[in-house]
Image 1 (tube, helix red, strand yellow):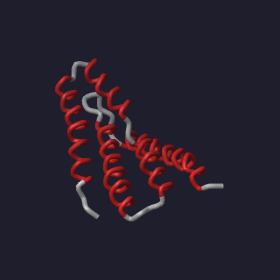
Image 2 (cartoon, one colour):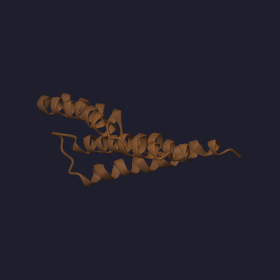
Image 3 (tube, helix red, strand yellow):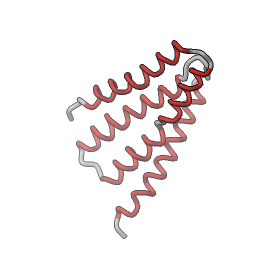
Image 4 (tube, one colour):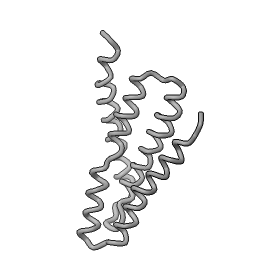
Length: 124
């Protein structure tokens, strides 16, 4: 059997682990209807893992393609979540927390983009 046939299994298992980490982080942080800190933090953690560790360090070191796919697509994909970001934004909108909504979107989108840009500039 070719090793490429095992890539989907690695991605699947890593995605389960990423989803579990996302859940655990969200349960460790105090829930607040005013600001969805848990979603923001796991998305920042996912940006760090994907851009800095996976696409930066591991690719530079010539790590096996299966490991890159499992960690990048699987773990980081399971950890981060655009749909939760949007759900949190809609909840803030529905409850009239407009200042929190704008701050959350700026930190999520703008902060995430700046973090990815900064981390992606690291030269190994």
